[in-house]
Structures are given as structure tokens and as C-alpha cells.
Length: 136
Image (cartoon, rainbow, N blue to C red; front, side, top):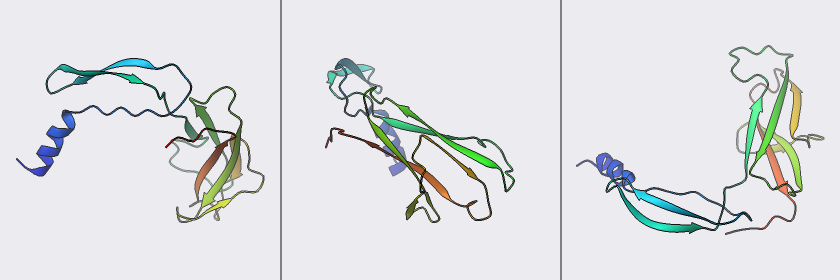
């Protein structure tokens, strides 16, 4: 059996659960071992879904964008608590390693004009949650 076949077989034998911290109530979950079609164990999940961020662009799906076009980058907070106090900061990078803060870009959306200067930029949004509990 090749290493790839063995890795594939091993991955079919396990189910990975990704959870993170939050204040919601624990749930009972049954994990199924697909190779045996039996129940592995019942697990109490104490850590609910992770907060995440969905970013979209007003030019999504377009194959050609003319210089001078106004582009809007938008964010949608997912699994955040109603009382989370968030701050936002848009940044850009030329190389994907070093990011630069965009002065005044502190909202959930950011608009800019597409130019020769920024057409290769990589954009990101940094979201900070005030008084957030840190988990390890």
C-alpha cells in the first residue's frame, strides 16, 4: 500500500471537529467512525463555533476591471456576540508579508479607486474585539 493510499485510508477513519470558545450552552454530539459505522463516543462540546469574517468585493466575478473603477470591500461578522465591541482597520500589502495601515479606513467597509498603483495590492481587514477572552 502506498503512503498516499495509507494516508487516505487513515483520514477516512477519523472525524475532526473544529470548535472554539464562546458562551453558548454545551451540546451532546455523537461522532461516527465511518470505517466501522459505529459510534465512537458521546462528547460534550464546551466550545461553540468560532468567530469568523466573510469578506466580499463589489467586483467579485468580473474578469475585467477598468482603472478608475470604484471598488467596495465589505465584511460580514459571523458568530460574533451581540455585545462584542469591535474595532476595524483595513490594511494593504504589496508582497503579502508586510502590511500597511490605511489611514481613516476603520469601518466594516472600505471603498477605493482601482489604479495602476494599487492593482496588485493584497487587502485585509483586522478586527479587534475589546475585552475579548483569550483561549489557549
